[in-house]
Length: 439
Image 1 (tube, rainbow, N blue to C red):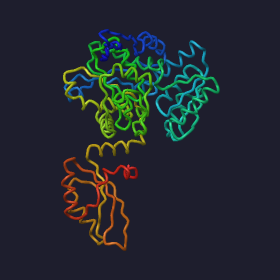
Image 2 (image 1 turned 135 degrees about the vertical axis):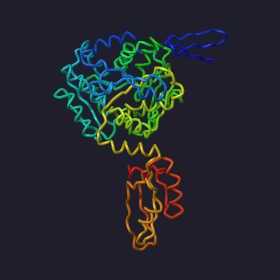
Image 3 (image 1 turned 30 degrees about the vertical axis):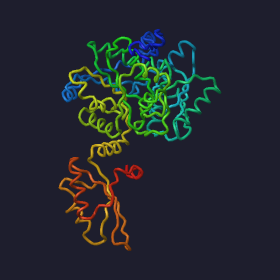
Image 4 (image 1 turned 90 degrees about the horizontal axis):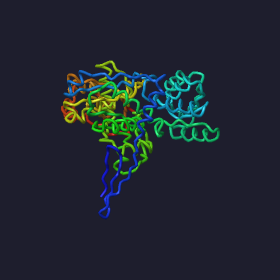
């Protein structure tokens, strides 16, 4: 029989009447976290923890947001990147580093290189949006060289590692590194300083695992009663899958929409820490994440990226457990490309049951479209997409029609009228292979 003590990370094994204790502790050393906090203080901001009255009232809890979207480079990633790079410079006089990233880690490395006056070579996939490339250039200025290689992160990562080996440069990993984890863990030190009363729950976005493993390392040392809940996107559940299988697992494919938290394989070091101490892992549909992102923007004027909304999207799944409790949501980043907002809105409407796509069959006669609008559409239904090509040799032709409803409950009456009036061809929301052409 094997028992695990999640507070300090040891394992007890009962065998033949004897008790064998293994004292292996996977957590990042708390002294290293305190040293990281001191090391990064010249550049990294102590971000605010803000009580959210509306959310607190909605869930009957004391809910706070840890606003890492207000950090330099608008994400927590600067913490780990700067801790790693400054330590390399201070101890080894390192003058050049390499990383591979298409997102917030690249920006953190770029800012750290510019601040320390060292060279940074950043490998990014050729598919990286121009907006992200410009952000890295802005933060790194003359200290950073960007190399676009490969169609995916994995391809650019392999080239970056070969480049490091050939030139004897240090590689700054985005999450699978103890110095990176110690830097991210400084988020937890700030929480303990700013919120002196015990915290009951902390909801943390999970991608590669650097942030959640850092927070776990601090709280399991100082306040083990706090429950740490990891939150992943449904399309990339690397931690959930790995814990279920009992080993760190590489996913065969992922949905990349929540790019700040979508990885095929989390770090091996973070996985061991999470395996020892994580209290729960939640998986959130991408559409739900989009709805939470829009809610934050529309109601609170908080601009977050999809990964930054993960912790807020998770609250509904824990609404019973958190009643009367003190809760912190880590808002991990605010680097949201404005060009993505239409897709974000579309995904939200689809998830909420407001937006629907149909294949509608029309008889090829005058007045058919008018009949559809007058006799099929509800008073508050709105056509938002319509694509139709007339076929002269056919009695009936099809059109792809997107309809936005006023309320979710309007769907069944619409579908009933469509079938009764002989306009229904097919419902397309359940056909993901077709959806790539629509959203």
